[in-house]
Image (cartoon, rainbow over all chains, first blue to last red; front, side, top):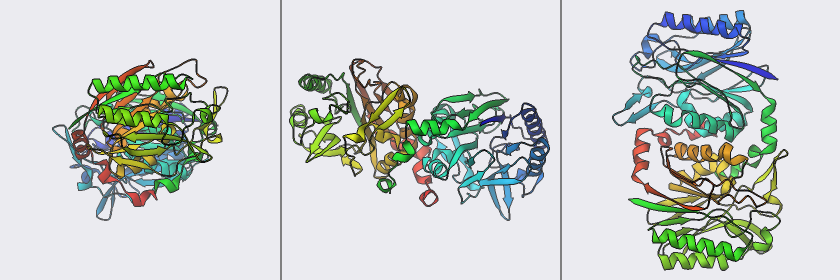
Length: 269
Length: 269
């Protein structure tokens, strides 16, 4: 069973309408190229900027989630809608909505681990000053397999990825936006290690690098197979990255190197 | 506080006496070059071959552990004695002995996860057919910091490395011998990911590549800092690899990117 994935590495501007238009265009192009699963990056409709989250936030359903739902139904594709800033009562969340081929919401993930960092003289970001964390691990079923969802900083925590893979997620998708400091240092290694350790497909979808933003995204969207090989990798520019996944590879790798079978949970407690 | 580490990437033969002589020579050279911690690879006194483990096995104390203890006292250095095949009653273990500067045994680790793999047409190895697994996680204290010990396949399991780092191990040392299939694919990524995720120093000490062995070691001993940078890396040949560790870097990295503080254990259960 081969699944064709398309990662829309779009360059995000401060104009929400334009961001949505661009996402729509890239989704349509992906579908025209026969993508089964189309994936957007983290906060694809707004700048990744804590001062602006509230301004761009949407209740569910809202203009962005409606657009994704309609497109998935019209184009008959899965859409993993990156993430947007969600407003729920008085709280904001960094939330990902996923839709099946009929426009039904099949997964909703609120970013669990918020990006609060202070890299001396280089980068200060305190996502938790405006965003509330999610409280649940997110896996959902598709016609192919179970998929796990993590948003950006969530992938820093191997425990979360393990939990999803033990819940039988075969593909873990991470809409993300690493930056110019953590990106070169940690992006590819982290993605590959999660795939290798869990013997799953790991997909990390970034926005393109926009050097005019206050937060400059690293780009380099990537698709990794369960052996850790890179199926496809983008550079920093705007583009659609395609990659085909053969789920049979998971069993093959797990039979060769039975990591999951060799786990010793009692030892790790 | 700078700690100088020396990894003795020795080429192991089938002659135990020669292996021990070579280990001694490399340990003496490391000490002459002012190494504080001298590290040997997995099964440094015998071929890594399940058919031979029993023949080379030693009770504790034995000729190999005695040699390491005496050298650490004479040279006034820490010695992390890679591993040897240990015989205890009717069981064999893949065991690592560590000695302080006075020749005292400060750490004993029995490999927890045994290397049972079957990579089609390439590599079959069933360590558990002759070796029994250890049952405890190993950390021990030195004048510098707490050290965690894992042997080879143990490092495949992020839970174990996390457990040791949560027990406050600041350096995790892995005597190891990846092979020509898993080495190129997984060795460096795994080592770097463990360092990055736990923000610790990660040291993986391999034997040199001996293409005459039944099991051909990958080599490429490596020392990684808590940001994931490579401090020192060997190729496949016999050599001593030196690298200096500045423990202050751990706090610096953990203040920049507070991964440990951001863990959500309740979520992962």
